[in-house]
Length: 257
Image (cartoon, rainbow, N blue to C red; front, side, top):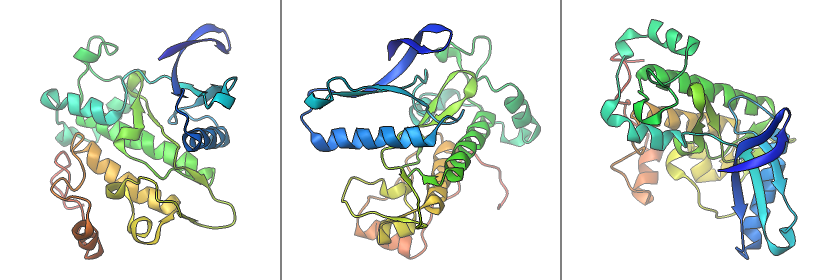
């Protein structure tokens, strides 16, 4: 968290988030951050995306770079849900009317919604977040961009129950092809990845849809790790090939749909 001067119109100082490389001496990390800046400029502005505000490049020759982003007060959705498990209110039986009320007045909690210790998490908030994330991903799709690392840890929570998709380190833009074939052996989030991403190293807007499905599972289990009893190994990959899938999340309704 930092204060940026004159970065927003009619606001002398703005609370921002700063992502930086400092004295890392790692050219590949610096190049990755530069690529991320380019992608965020291409993405543009949207309510449900962590928006790019600027960069500090004056010491880039020394491998020092700062990315200035919107500040999301409550951190990532994964950690927030995990911290609220003991006080979670499951109101799935009150849907759909309860979630319509939540959309109309999406502030989490009662009394003082800006006091995190008193904020209450309900099923309606999970539905509201799921919808907002879908809006953000729909926007990326309209820009012909796939995210490549969609997960609850990469969705941030702001005031008034607004969530924003973050971390565009793996994002790519499509040009004339309909998918991107990954060739580098970077760390990849296998449990969130579609089958064609795991086995054929292909990423696309459609594989983001698979990741969104896993993210929904995270939301409606209040941040449980997907495939919790499985380790990422050859047995895990074979189970996926054989049709093994995530079980129904805990906090969903009793129907079969």
